[in-house]
Length: 280
Image 1 (spheres, rainbow, N blue to C red):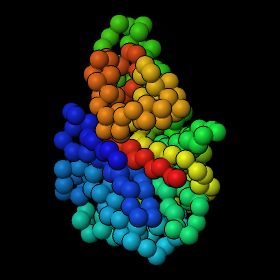
Image 2 (image 1 turned 90 degrees about the vertical axis):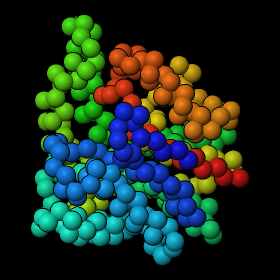
Image 3 (image 1 turned 45 degrees about the vertical axis):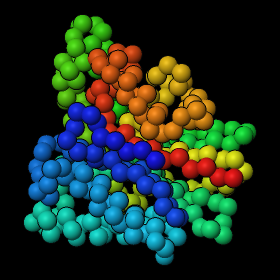
Image 4 (image 1 turned 135 degrees about the horizontal axis):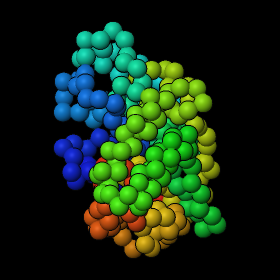
């Protein structure tokens, strides 16, 4: 398991964990504006940490269904958010700190994994026969539009990444304002309505199967970094190194592409998290 903050950031707004019956990655998403509802270093980290704590409790046993675990967490975090913020209703989704979640649950007597996804954290599965990716792609098209425009501005105007990023602020703001609306994309906020839009399913456990859960700060390198053109290549590389070694390699590449021209992205570095499960 690995979870590291953006080297330029003060705190890590990701969380990752492998427990006795659950594994997850939580990727905090920064809201529009800085409100400091929770009177902490980061509202986004506060939400991610509270969600992580509720998952840790669930890992001890009891509930068998990921969506119910997330719904129960939403209820408790909502109550705590009101207590610490002094509010009596949630801010609009775009102004609310949120998280993207990918989770697996299993039972000892089953050869089956139950998965849940909300937002763009991803699950990749490798067996001796096939490699597949599970993704909630509802957010991807909005981010892709903004990144493509930013890259075009860099190339056509000959400006820096930072200058191009500022020029697409209006696109980013408009896209963020669409969050948790019908026919757009959904992320976790402490509201049952968001939980109703999770993607769930089952994965049959096979011999020699490997599973990676990761945030975009980790998997974003796939297809953009030399030698890691696909998930197949990522799993192959992880036979030679571990997750921490792979993340160190990703960081070196990001640093070498500080203007984000070879690997178009919103910022040079991001928080990055991944867990790896192996089944015999």
